[in-house]
Every structure is written in C-alpha cells, then in structure tokens.
Image 1 (cartoon, rainbow, N blue to C red):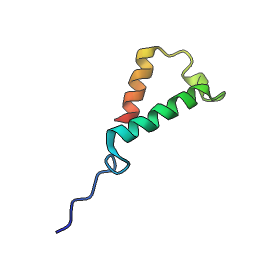
Image 2 (cartoon, one colour):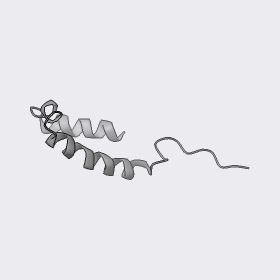
Image 3 (cartoon, rainbow, N blue to C red):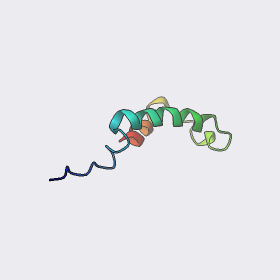
Image 4 (tube, one colour):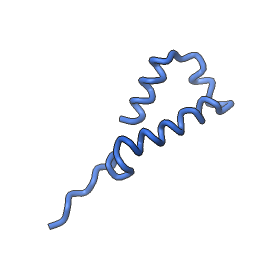
Length: 56
C-alpha cells in the first residue's frame, strides 16, 4: 500500500520552509526600485498581515 501524496503545502517543507522563503522575499521586494513603491506607505500591521497571508 502506498502512502498518501503530500499536499502542495507540505512538499516544499511546510510552514517553516515557506516562512523562510517569504522572510527572504519581502525585504527584496521592499528594496526593489519598481516594486517597493507598493509597500512604501503601508503600516506595520498591514505588512504583517500580507506576510502571514503569503505564508498561509
């Protein structure tokens, strides 16, 4: 009998691996000259919510 296939969320390593990617990606987006303007005037709570939504 074969084991059930892992979900798409579990394949890259689950929450910890996805959180690590997001934690490296977001600062790069903030510092990008073209994309950083979309995050320039956001509050800390909005940025934290966006981060959590990306991870989830």
